[in-house]
Image 1 (cartoon, rainbow, N blue to C red):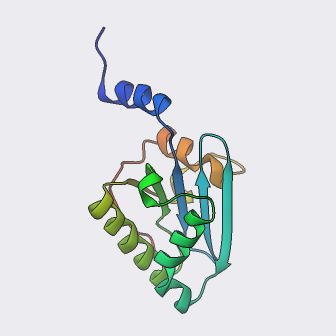
Image 2 (image 1 turned 30 degrees about the vertical axis):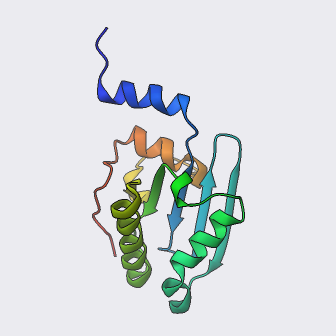
Length: 143
């Protein structure tokens, strides 16, 4: 039997806890969601310049409130726009820093990527990224 890397990745994912973090700072609110193998948690915060500057602290506090830290996150899904220039640029920088320091894979999506899908929900973003073959560690922002 020949296993392709995607097949092997699926086998490995099923054997380890997969914790996914969704970050959306493109809209009117800062939205964060954690998807664990057992639960889904989310928060929203006011989307202000001050909160852009505190985004890493907001993410850290959110993770800590569920007894998680960045090392527990396996994948990050980031809304790349369209939307707020400052929010998108800041969140991209933060996610790239996470990738460099902790080697967390990230996927930058836009709702526009999911043509033909109806009633898109945040908890479905990881599956939609897979379905629409959103490349990991690739950023092409839409402002």
